[in-house]
Length: 474
Ligand SMILES: [Fe+2]
Ligand SMILES: [Fe+2]
Image 1 (cartoon, rainbow, N blue to C red):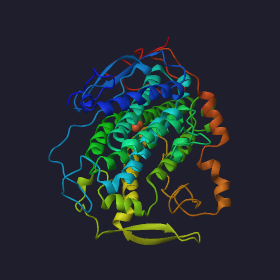
Image 2: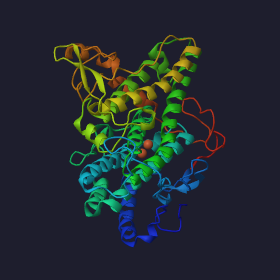
Image 3: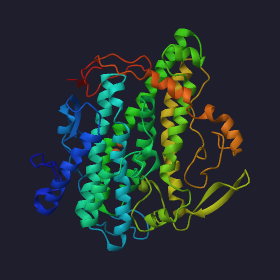
Image 4: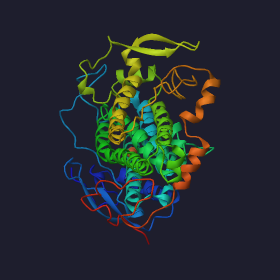
């Protein structure tokens, strides 16, 4: 169904035919706007931003671009078109018809899954709200705001499901999504990573590369769900999500590129000399990468999980790209885990495949993360340096799962807490790293100009030049 922009809430779900639902969402809309104005991007609400807005759920030509003030962005409800032949793709009910309504026995679990996903969307907007003033260029400023408005729309996507399918409980959950806040002492966001403040742009690029990519894999799992409206809304969210990871991928690429230029100019790889020249030395990039990658790994949950097993069995949450697997029942297979033995070493354990679904998803995520590193390392190699960026082991600095609280090297070798402490500043951002990064955070507002620590992008947005005025500041 095409998108209706005449309604107060743009939608392609024929919202007008369900007055009760429409009224309930129109009641939530001003609450959302109030939240956006209070906790969305600070100080740029009157700027004209060159944003894309969804106009169709067709993968080809689904958006238009134009100047919009962020509070006027048309946040709406867009689901991929329904496939009348879609069948349950995995688990005990494999091959049966997908659900258009929620079976009573899965109501509480699905609500929890939707709320947990929904909670991350506004959380990231809150985390990033101070970044506008320190954007390295107008181009980057626009990308930040594009990501922010789309995360706002992703919240709408989940709130629609809560209102449309969960009655009063759903409406209450929708309100609470605006009441919990990132880093709040009393009412924090549900997942740890979404309470980490993002004060600098290196962290923002790491977040959009690693944490938005976690989002991609969560959405891919939910896009397999037997609850068809959830699957369809996640499919469309994935279309938008791709840009967020592009921002992270190209952002880190441009940081590395600029650092290599400075290394060449000064003919040195001495981190202090590179810092003095106003760039970011590669070991610091590695430490930020270690921090955000390990933090994002926790979002997949424990290596062994009976919850994950029942989500799979009941058809609520599948494996990303489920159709690529041969066996969609996964009841006779097993998965080999390497776990800490509690005595400073490791042991192998064979567990039922369904209980390993978190680990299966985490492994596909890690493989996806490696693609960017290959690209960044190619730049470094071409510049003639032996340094390589690497993903740390999935055991490193974990706070959730079997490796939680087990000190290891970045390579995953178990070590003592003392040894970890002695190397902490080699492996994770130190106070002085953070101080240096913060010292570089000066906003650049002249179109086409870049901060000294980052190279310009290869091309602009929507075929416009890099020096286009992507944000008209008032
Ligand atoms: Fe999102
Ligand atoms: Fe995102």
